Image 1: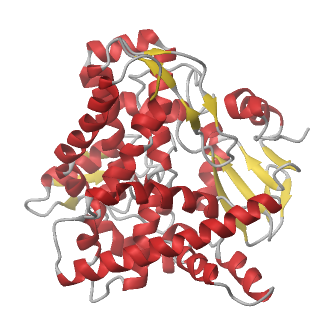
Image 2: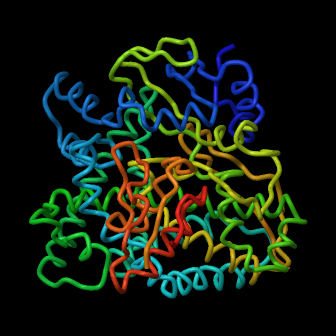
Length: 402
Length: 63
């Protein structure tokens, strides 16, 4: 058997394939992905702590590009991404994470609740003004997080659409290539991102001169005589957009779909709004935004009797770990009151999503308001899933409100 | 306010550290380094409660 997560049926519903892998070949070499797939909760958990599995996975790509010819303008953008804390190991990661942490503190995020509610309501107003079949992804779930990020960074409201374009281009670059056509799109996206680079550079300069209450100003704070450089701040803005956009779109859309497919759970949440916080955790576990996180192997490792070699790639299948019956009772049952709920939709350990509190807040507000304001919401047709390895992502979620 | 972590329960989810890395330090492997008895600075009580609530395995509590 060689598992392929990119067939149409696996994209629409990967969970049966995950169950087979967990039971029969939990440390699986996939020829299709040229990578190891770890599907059990305990193996994925341990992998987050294993120093043989490195996050430093952009720099080797950059080095290969530079060795193979003249550096292009696009290499500058790739250089920017190689500085992201998410693709670095300690001590580089430790320093960046510490400097960024202040801007993401729980209290700061909690204070943004009202602003986020207003943005959610603005999108739902537009959705409610429409009638008949409408796509909840393009109308609500997709634009919402880009607006939140643009607002948090203190960018003018008129620039929101540009954030969406850059987010798409970042995803194209970060999730790599395959085939000549995609390589060409990849290069085009890299060129597009030079505009983003210039935009964030200007935004950074403006906030340096005139700090505000926004997150970018907070990222400029000193920590033990150290601070983020302008280059690092630009990279941090791009990371915030990349990591905070599509993931949140997926969280909101997948949560809504799961509720529509489980009307008894939806009714339960509607009857008891206090259930919202555990409900969002369960929705993240049940069908979270990310299927796979990557690690680069830097030392030979034996796992489950298999030898994983340095230089190979390991895919940590979060979506499978979150359905592992060894960790969760009745893992395929959606139980909005599940507790405790140690899902790993946000990863684990030192690289655990720094925006987890913000993502929770956005998803709670969006799901809470959708449930409250759209009582007659129904699924109009089966959703269309993207053929994406990393994310669990719908192209469209066509619904109707009455 | 004083807080504590049960190290036998902590699974290194890192969610407390996401809320506040200063109040909820993690060790190199991502486990809580709060220890058996940590003093919360005055004014930080609400943040401490947020961090405790973020733990998915309830390893943290107020003493």
